Length: 197
Image (cartoon, rainbow, N blue to C red; front, top):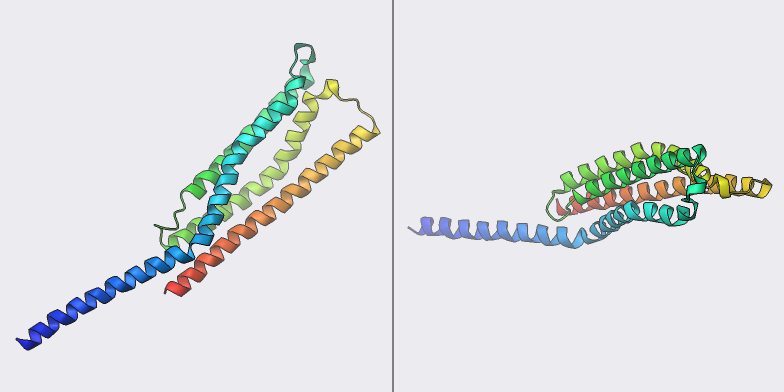
């Protein structure tokens, strides 16, 4: 009888220890994953923000050119190039937002979170090369839309060439920083995994 009682007490104690260990791991995960979660939320906000700000900014800045007397073949080509670029950029931001929205550091295991971050990094790298081509197309579309209102001289040509280079450099720097953030989040998650295990 005493052995049976000891077994029952030991099993209760063992069950309490298991529950305590699970609770400790959960608390550690929640505490340590706050920083990566904030970074993911910021990246998600930027993707959502970009979906709306680019079309809005272009519509506002190009609206003076949308006049009946300005419509010609160049204007139509510019509209097609600009619209196609904006649709593509919005689609990329929507894909990024959905990928980030599917990450739930609180509920997903560390392995699943790291896998989703890795998949997101592949998505960002894959779209990087296309955006490097889309930005010049977007700039060409803007130039074609404003063709009738632009006075072409050396200053204007140098301005647009400089603007093109600036956009190219800023795009490359943004992607580099974005990739570094993704790498840091992945490293923090792996560190949490090592700490919890």
